[in-house]
Length: 167
Image 1 (cartoon, rainbow, N blue to C red):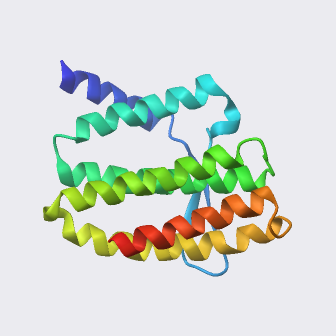
Image 2 (cartoon, rainbow, N blue to C red):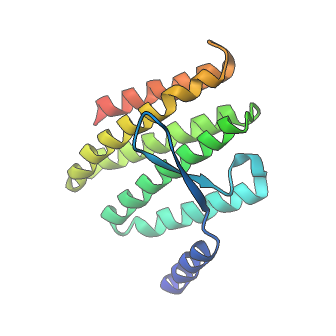
């Protein structure tokens, strides 16, 4: 029964994939996909997306390497959501989106620390976080120095550095 449910979930995710296009920042080779659903889409639509993610995380809990890979994917999704919010100057959602982004990274870091068999993932995550840092850094220039929005972006950058040290 669980296998059938998961197969349906994966089929649904494939049919309604959230990636629309990819965009690169000039400073890094990191490609950030645009999400068709982000926090600005409202509680129901975004909540449903998060529910699907949490169900997938629960299922992948049976397979540590797959769960780590999916958590890495979610870090990219959260970066995309964060970028979309900044690009749209959505000041109402920037705080909670920044918190979701660094919380997702934090959960991934903790998961890797609890699973020594995934030590190679730690090095990959360090590299990925460096790319994310380089990608995010110029985004804060869209806001006035030390404004609330600028500080939220700076806070994300500080968390990235903190998480890299924990790896």
